Length: 484
Ligand SMILES: Cc1cc2nc3c(=O)[nH]c(=O)nc-3n(C[C@H](O)[C@H](O)[C@H](O)COP(=O)(O)OP(=O)(O)OC[C@H]3O[C@@H](n4cnc5c(N)ncnc54)[C@H](O)[C@@H]3O)c2cc1C
Image (tube, rainbow, N blue to C red; front, side):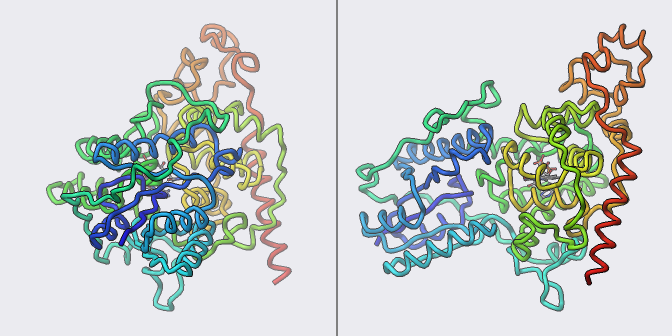
């Protein structure tokens, strides 16, 4: 018998549930990745995000080649590709790891149905999370909508251990004879490849992910709690791409952290626990989306579905380009546009600013993040946006609105982050760094930064917009109450 292992958001060989399950059968294995061309051509996926995925696929292909194997690459719709591969090779089993987004579930159900009809045994595994949607429910068997009680239950449950590595790779012997496309390239899809050492292919593979985890465990995890909100310090794990592309498994991360925790003392323990809490948020949002698929483009809280957003295109464009005149917002958007990643505190600040200061619909910002982020994860992105826009589960209340100046002063007190991404502000004295419009003219001259010329005048007045935002939310709430 032969088993196909379909790689998707799990681009690694270590601690891979579906691969492990397939190996246990003792059957020779055909590893395959299916490229969905329409997605690679779609503007919904930006160049940086696409490049990072291609690089992770290439790294997996290289590792398999070093083992004397090969990653088959095929293009097309998954059920057709997999049916054809099963017929071509006589494979009677298909293994893959479960994914929980509405689109992925639809695709996987179809694949399972079509292949089962062909007589192929379809085996799916838990791999993306430690606890799947449905494993943690309230006493009334409803999904949790509030994080803290969800977290409490999550913490009490036993966790799967990482899977052991096979000592011998039993790969399909005619693997090299099977037709395979080359690893997809940016050029093939008419895309621009980002340039610079940080974009080298090896930065995105399994090996790089394991190194990043080790570095984090050797240092920043011990100070995570006090430094995690400071974008200038850059002390978070930066594991989000690896966890979403699956170049690293969540079991490996969790159990490695547990080992570090076992020998930690005092403040270190609180810090490590704060990091673990973030991993729980990741799973919390997976189950929110699973049970509330409409939150993909509708507010979780129905009372805020009809907020009368202004949706001014000019303001949205200024936000996308980092030209709002508020340094912490602009520097954050530059970080996103240049690196494909943004610090969590800044994701909250920019999302709050777009929705509550610019009064632009959260769905616009969410789509922009989805295009730009290399660590894009549908559930986390929806969760983060709806939290910031006050429309989601356990969200920031709509009347608690981030002040873009005080957020900057609190979380980038030395202006290190702002100066890094907005070099035009480098000579601006610290007292003005988060409100450069307050600089007297002679200081603007000394700093080489004329407001309105070298750096924009704020595009809106925060105090006014805050009042307007609160009124719009209140109106939506009142409208909803009347219709109930
Ligand atoms: C508006 C908005 C949009 C977001 N979009 C995404 C997204 O598309 N993809 C994504 O992975 N995260 C998203 N997040 C969550 C968070 O910002 C990132 O996971 C985090 O910044 C990644 O950096 P890190 O790996 O250094 O995080 P760390 O602080 O080191 O956290 C470790 C891991 O925990 C998980 N995590 C941390 N914070 C959150 C969170 N708030 N929600 C869910 N999981 C979390 C991630 O997997 C992360 O890698 C979003 C947050 C907001 C506010």
